[in-house]
Structure formats: C-alpha cells, structure tokens
Length: 135
Image (cartoon, rainbow, N blue to C red; front, side, top):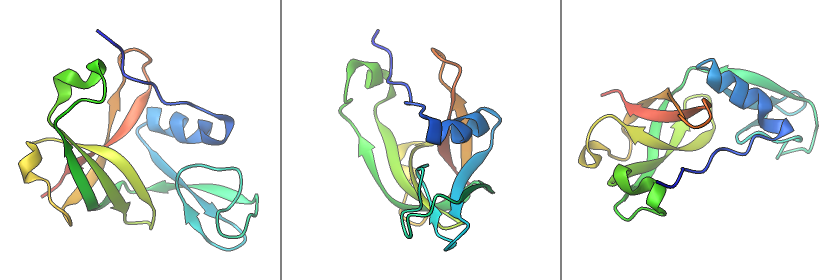
C-alpha cells in the first residue's frame, strides 16, 4: 500500500506542528497591524512585518464550503473514499482546509458547526488537525 503524503514541516511552521502534537491549534497574529493569518509564514500578509505571535485557537468554526471526494487522488486514499474536504472558518478569523470526520458525507453542509480534533499519522506520529461536526 502506498503511504499518504506527510506534512512538510518548515522552520516557520514548526511551532504549529509541535502544538498540533500537543492537541492545540495555533494561528499567527501580527503585532504591528493585528492581522490574523493562517498558514504560518515569516511575515505578515497585510503589512509585511516580521513581528508575528502565535495564539491558540479554541478550535471551533463553521464550514464555509466543502467537496465530497469519490475518486481518490492516489492509491493511498482509496480506502478513505468517499470523504469530505472542507474550508472551515475558525471563530478567531482565519480559514483552514481539513477533512471532516464523524458521519457520512451527506450530513455535512455549508454553515455546519465543527470543532477541531487531531488524528495521528501512523507512519510519522505527527498529529493532523481535522474537523468534526458538533451539531
């Protein structure tokens, strides 16, 4: 069986992945302009400041949009289909793409409330943020 791709952990995202392994979801906020951003970067996307701080998210949000995958992108995902990939608007003001777990794809809808859970990748032990329906 083909292994699923692993996240590429770079220096600017190391803190995010370390927190995920602790079961925490982090995002960045610019200390100069207050911009909230995700995915992790070295500079602010709004003002280019390098004064970014990590903040902890409550891990709650709303499905902005989603798709149901019926054709696996590779053999590694064959056993998972069908599965849901969603863009989730977290309550703190940033958006993440993640899988929606817990239930069949037909129960996911735009506007559904979700919470972040963490799944461990068996090959590496790294934890990945995923969404779980709350309602």
